Image (tube, rainbow, N blue to C red):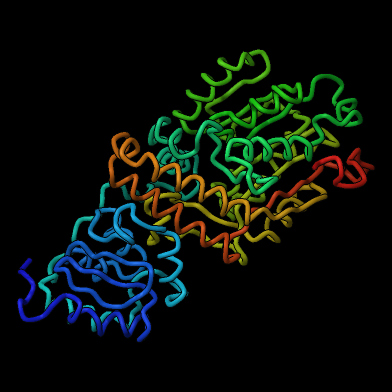
Length: 435
C-alpha cells in the first residue's frame, strides 16, 4: 500500500463517491485517517485506515462495510462514543437497500482508492467469519451454525444478556421495567398462554403437566415454568455450552427433579407426548424447507388438546439470510426468517389450530437497546473474553437489529396453536387471564 497523495486529502478524494451514494446533503459526517472530513450531521463515520476502502472494493455492500468495522478500520462515532444504531439508521435512510457501496458508486470509489493508495489485492477477511459446510439444515451443519453463534463463552453472554440469561425478546409491561423483570414477564406470558395454571388444562393432563422447551438456551424458560407453574420440563439445545450452564442453573435452583436439559436436536425426540411445547427463538434456525416437518414433529409430540407457543422473528415475505451478508457470515449462518403467513400455513398443514397471534416487535427493539448498553458498559471485560473483533461483531449486529424492529422490517410474533383435532378446546374465552 502506498501513502496518500500529499496534495489530495482523503476527504477530497472520496467526496465525489460519497455524494453519488448519499446525495449532496450527507446524513453523517465522514472523518478520515488523515484528519480530513466531509459532510455534516450529529453522527460520524470514522474511517481509520485506507484498508477500509479495499474491503469495500472487494466486497461491495454490507459485507465489506462489516469486515472493515470488525477489524477496526472503520467506526461509527468512534469506538464507543455514540449511538451506533442511530448512525446506521442515518445511513440506511439514504441507502435503503444496504449499508455499503452501491454499484453506481464503484467507479468513483475505485478512482478515490487509487488516489489515496488503497488499491491492492483482496484483504483477508476477519477469522470470525464462517461458511458452514455440508447440506443446509442437516443435523451436522445446524450444529456448526449453532455452535458458531452460541458457543462463544457463557461469561460473554452473561455480560450482554444480564442475570436473566435469556436471549430472546423481553416484554416490558411498564416503561420503567428493567430487563430481568421484562424477561420474566415474557416467560410468564408464555406460560399463561400455554395454560399451565388453568384448572381445565391441568385436569386434562392427568398429572403434573409436561412441557417441552425446544431451543432452551441457558434454561431460563424451563426454570421459570418449573418454579412458578409446577410442571415437568424437558429442555433441548444443540449448543454444548448452553447445555452445560443450563444444567448448572437447574441444579442451583433445586429443580433437578422437574427439569431435564438435553443436548439434543428436535428431530431426535421420541419420548412424547407432552402437554405443552414452547419454541422460543428456535424457528429462525429451522429454515423454510424444514418448517413443515418441524411443525409436524411438534404436533406428533403433543397430546390431544396440547398447546404450542411459537415465539419467533419474522419478516414480510420471508427472508433467507444470505451467506454474503454480515449476519450470514458472522452471526446467524443459515438463518431464515419466515413470513407470518408461511408459519401459520405450516402449523395448519401439520394439523394445528392457530388460536392467537401477537406482535411484540417494539419490545424487541427495547430489549436490544438493553443488550447494547450492557455490552458497551462492560466493553473491556467483553473484549477480554471473546476478543475485540467478536465484541465488535455483536455491537454492530445488535445495533443494526434495533432499526429492523423499529421500522417494521422485522417482527416478533408469538403464535399460539393447539392440537385441537377438530374437538372443543379448553382455552379461556378471552385473553384476560394472560395479562
